[in-house]
Length: 156
Image (cartoon, rainbow, N blue to C red):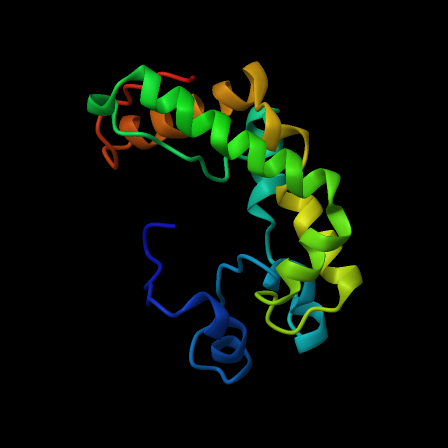
């Protein structure tokens, strides 16, 4: 969208800005993805759906990264600690959801569960070959368009 004028707005204020006519549209993240209709807003495009149609790959949302200079052993230790934490949360789901609700900006338990399932799933534990390919594809697209440096990745 080369001719679009963008403005930065905190993610939790985007729906209010669209409703008030401050902006014509906004890119919603977090709980806004599941609550926008309650605010009388409509979806123009779901970028996750668009990504899948274009690539047939999962949406590359985010990663935990370790600076390469820290070494592979540190990266493995970080990975192991994060996996242990995620396993604990998955095996204590109710407790984890109650904790997550503290940060859910007004979601009820059902919506919190839906939101968490969007981000904590099998790909969280192991993104696999498709997940790695999705990340490489996204970064290569950015590089080809001159938006990012050439990607240099090592998945642990």
